[in-house]
Amino acid sequence: MSFLKKHSKAIKLVVKIVLSALALYYVFSKIDFKQTIGAIKGINIYYLMLSVLVYAISQVVSAFRLNTFYKYVPVKISSITNIKLYWLGMFYNLFLPGGVGGDGYKVFLINKYKNAPVKRLIGTVFADRLSGLAVILVYLCGLVYFIDYNFDEVTMPQGGYKLVHDILVWINPYLNYFIFLIPLVAAGYYMYLRIFSRHLVGATWKVFSYSILIQGLQMISAIIILTSMGTELAGRQDDYLFLFLLSSIMSAIPISLGGLGLREMTFMFGSQYLGLNPDHAVALSLLFYLISLFVSIFGGYYAYNPKAIFKGVPEVE
Image 1 (cartoon, one colour):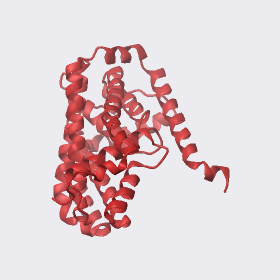
Image 2: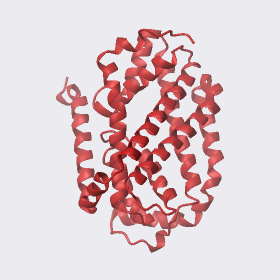
Image 3: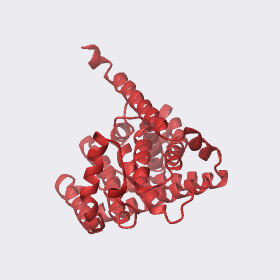
Image 4: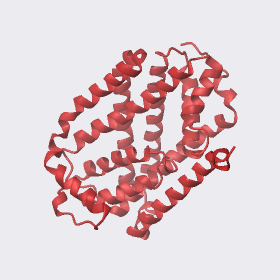
C-alpha cells in the first residue's frame, strides 16, 4: 500500500486546513481586520443568543426533514433518535472533516442497528442534501430581483477577477428574469427523485416545504447576527441574504473545513459588487460559522457514545 493511499484521510485533512488558512489569510489581507474584529466584539449578546436559538431550531427542523425521507426507505426511527443522529452527523461534518463524514457514519449506524439497505440510505441522505440546495437556488432566484447591483459600474482587478466581472456584466440584463426559474428548480428536484430515488417521490413536497422553512430560519439567524453587530441595514437585508445564500453553496464544496475560508471569500468579493460593508459581511460569515460550531459540539457526546443514540426511546411511532 502506497504512502498516499495509506494516509489519504490525514492528507485530505491537512489540505483542507491549509486551503482554509490560505483563504482566510487572503480575505484578511484585503479587508480592515481591526474593523471586522471590532464588529464582532461590539455585538449585542442577547441578539446573538437569539440567533443561536433560531439556528438550532433550523437544525431540529432539518432532522425532521430527513426523518420524513427515512419513512420512505422504509426505516422506522423515532424523532428523538433521529435528532441525536443528526447532531452526531453535524459534529462529524464540522469537527472531523478529514475522517468519516457525518452522513456516512449515520448511514453506518442505521444499517447496523436497523438493518436498513445501505444503497437506499445513501440515496436518501443525498436527496435530503439536494433538497436544501434546490431551495437555496429558489431563494436566490427570488432575491436577485430585489438586490441592488450594477456590475457595469464596479471596477475589479485584472486577471481571473476580470473574467468573473465580465461574466456578471454579460448576465446583468437577464437577472430580473431569474425569478421565473423557481418552478423549474422545483420541477427539476421532483424529476431527480422520479428518476434516481423513485421510492422517495411521495415525500417530495413535504420535504421541500421543510427546506423552505429551514433556509428561512437560517436567513433570519443571519439578519439577527447583523443586527447584533449594529450593521446599518437600511433596506440592504436582501443583499446580505443573497451573499449569505451564495456562501452556503460555496461552503458545500468539500475542499475546506466546513466551508471556512470559502464563505468569507464569497462575502468579501460579493460585498464589493453590491456596495456592502465588507468588514461586517465577513464578520457575519465568521460568526455564523462559530454558531454552527457551538451548536454542533453537543453532538460530540454521541460521537464517543454512539450506543446512547438508540437507547431509552421507543423506535416505533
